[in-house]
Amino acid sequence: MKGFFKFLLTGLVLCFVISPVLAGTQKISKETKDMLINKLNSSSLVVYKDGNTEEFNQHGLEPLLIYLDGNNFKGTQVFDRTVGRAAAYLYVYGNADYVYADTISKPAIEILKKNKIKYEAKNIVDEIQNKDKTDLCPFEKLTKDAQSPAQAYGLIYKKMHADTAIVYFTPDITSDNLVRIYKTLGKDLKGNVAVKLHSGEPGGHNFLQPDFIKDLVTYLNGTIVECNTAYEGRRNTTEEHKKAIAEHGFDKIAKVDIMDSEGQMELPVLEGKQIKVNYVGSHLKNYDSMLVLSHFKGHQMGGFGGALKNMSIGIASSYGKAYIHGAGKPEDLWTCEQDKFLESMADADKSVMDYMKDNITFINVMSRMSIDCDCNNNPAEPEIADIGILASDDPVALDQACVDLVYNSKDPGKASLIERMESRHGIHTVEAAADLGVGIRKYKLIDIK
Image (cartoon, rainbow, N blue to C red; front, side, top):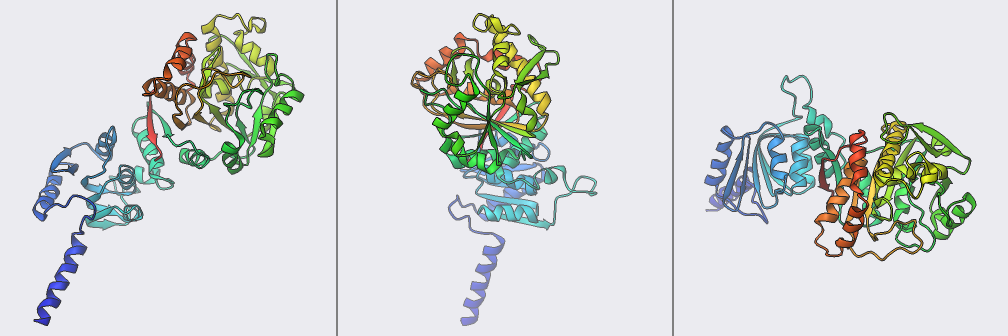
């Protein structure tokens, strides 16, 4: 009798190893599981949830991307022919409960284990190789240094959809998430890093606060950069601008540089719509890379201000600002035809992108979104609720995503901001920038979770 119980206990242990109990998920019978595994003879991916089965026949990672487009894997048991590092990251991003693979790689196992996703496999290999068995699968290489499932998802999606920009998103507006979303971009800004932000006109209070941005600026070992304004106020001279920056506390968290304090430099605008040259602060030449950190909100003249405005008007010298506003005629600063002004901003954006090349990236923070710019010393109070933080290497896609999030917001307070954007034809800056090749409007929004 004692031998019988020992045999029974051993059998139960072996059963657990071969077919782990799906704790916290729906349990399926061995017959159902075998049936789902057999479906891999004719399908590349089988997704089982609540008694329903979906089968996919697309190649490689494509069925995973198809399923993730509007869905997630939460509550599912997935049956896949091959699971490598890239696929494992997608299953983690989508919160799969259980993964079966005919073949699984050791890196994939580590990723699934780390994220407490149960798995089974027929075969275990060191790595997933390419078709010719001469090297790693390209997607395994692509995601080898990924720091998070969200970053891996973005890398994979972009590789498979070259016509689509990746925009990362989080609804939680915290200092930690500001750093986290920058890291998710996977952008290594090197050398002397400029952090371009709006220092805020004294009297206003909606601008990004020093305590909020401090950790990110410190992480980058960055210098906060600004340029003087072209209108009367507390930031139209270097001396007054420095006082305003000190009052707002930016000088307490990092070095601060007024880039046109010693003049300006010219950036050519190749095939511009309105202007052929962009006048920027001369200190721009001192920086190797740049983070354009923007507070997305309304704007009295541009309709809205985001990455494109911060990169154009924001980096322009005092004279350069008037030059852009007047579409090449500074004397027309306040009277220029609206679309010409908006196209001039897009022209200026192109010149900065051409100058910085790949050494620039962008973050927009959608908080305290007044209809008025941070250059206003008495802005209207925000009516729309905060939305989140977005980041991208593409400023066109980033601003487009922010505009879309405003329109798609369920908050009725969005009406005033939408009126401000539409009455100034604000989207035309995005249209013009896309036409100039500054970026693309089509994007994939990926929540960093």
